[in-house]
Structures are given as C-alpha cells and as structure tokens.
Length: 116
Image (cartoon, rainbow, N blue to C red; front, side, top):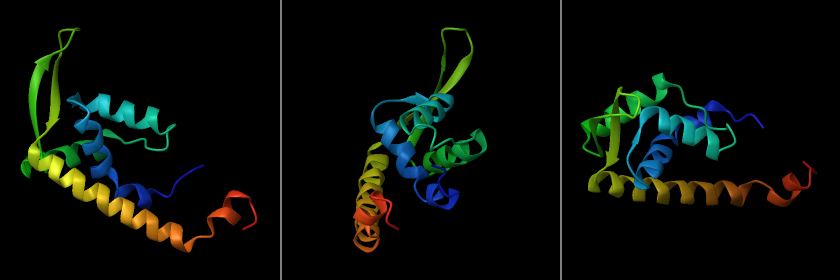
C-alpha cells in the first residue's frame, strides 16, 4: 500500500533515532535498513536523510565520525548520544499517543474487514 508522504515526514526523526539506538550506522545503511524493515514503505532519499542527521548533530542528539570501510572508502558513521536517547523517548511516547488517538477514531475492525 502506498502511504501519504506527509505521514512519513512527521516520523523520520523517530525512525532514524530508533535505528541509531541499536548501534552506529552510516547513511546508506540507515536508508537500506529503513526500506528493508518496512517492506519499502520508508524509502528515504539522501536529500531527506542527511538534513535530518545534520540537524540531529547540531542539536547534539547524534555524533558522527569517519572510518575507513572494507573497500578503502571513508564512511561517516552516526551514533546516538544521551540527548538523542532522550529525544527518542519523547518522540516514541508522542507517536504512541498519536497512534492511540487515531486508532480510537477510525473504525479499525471495519477497515480490516473491508467494510469501509
């Protein structure tokens, strides 16, 4: 199912921080994992991801460093900071609250059964 892009725009920071909470990753790795875990529902472009990472870095929510990859190329890795973990906790709570309110309004069973 295709998802309205406006739904994604409000949740990208939460998604990125969630992946970084599992361990440090480089940009393309974040893009690939988001796509793979969401069955290609979340297909971020570099032009979307990197501004998010730069903002998080400016706010000291993530830190980055360069490291040489197996192929000899330098890659920039990102790691969540304690401040980033705090933001992740806030964003996750906000998402759960929002999702619960949406679920309280839409007729879940009717939609699942195709009645709407």
